[in-house]
Image (cartoon, rainbow, N blue to C red; front, side):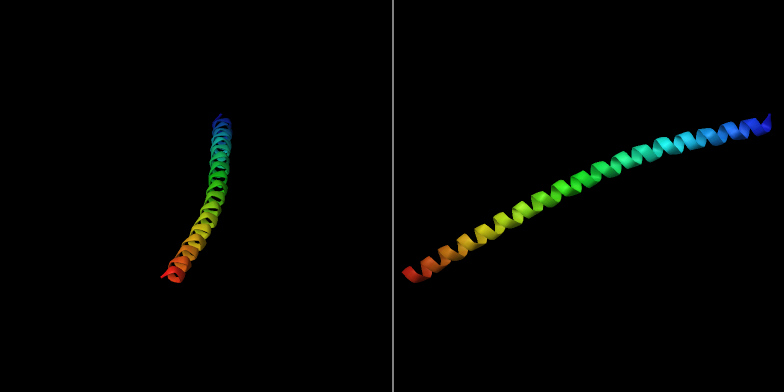
Length: 67
């Protein structure tokens, strides 16, 4: 009887572990998707920043020429 109880308990631990693993896998996937989205956003902002920097330099050059 005691052996059966231990086997039953071991099965419950495995079921809980499987549920936790599934939840953790889901969370990891969610975080990976968030990281990918943030990387895309970061790249877009870098490009926008570079374009603004070029426009600012061009404006500064025009100001110097007209001075």
